Length: 242
Image (cartoon, rainbow, N blue to C red; front, side, top):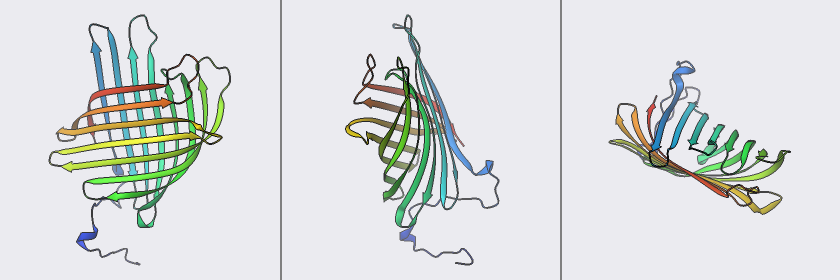
């Protein structure tokens, strides 16, 4: 309408996201960051984890940036890293549909991935939206350029991208449980694929200070010679949201 005023029945509203129309770019940012470190005396293995998640929300779209890094150091072995950076733009459509554009970079020493950059797009829909639960499914395609440890040349491939996301939230105390599972089938050979899954449980301890338990898992159906086909991380961290 011309006045930008809408009337809804209470039963139709499951969530309200406040957007300050007169606020600047910085004031509209929401996000969190967390850090964890674990040392085992017997094996002398030290693992450090760092994660950050920042989003910028408007009425019709959401812009998000996510960073994660897990580094493992142990005696007589090379230091290994599992790192990723992801940027996505989600445009909201009618009837809970949305389009999404994304780009990212990742590195996983355990799987022999020296570096992988990707860019693509997808169509998705929120299958479930309540005041406590949210479930969405997206399907799309992306181009990926990968370099592997021990390989001289990089490879460029077209992949599918199917992702399922689930979020459960409660407010007293503030707690969230997230699961994300993504499959990337190779379009020229669907028997070859890779998969990523992440699960996290976050609970607020004090105002904006939280404790988080998270597990990440990666799988390659056709790993390079000498590399593992799967890798996982388990993290306990303290974080702050803003």
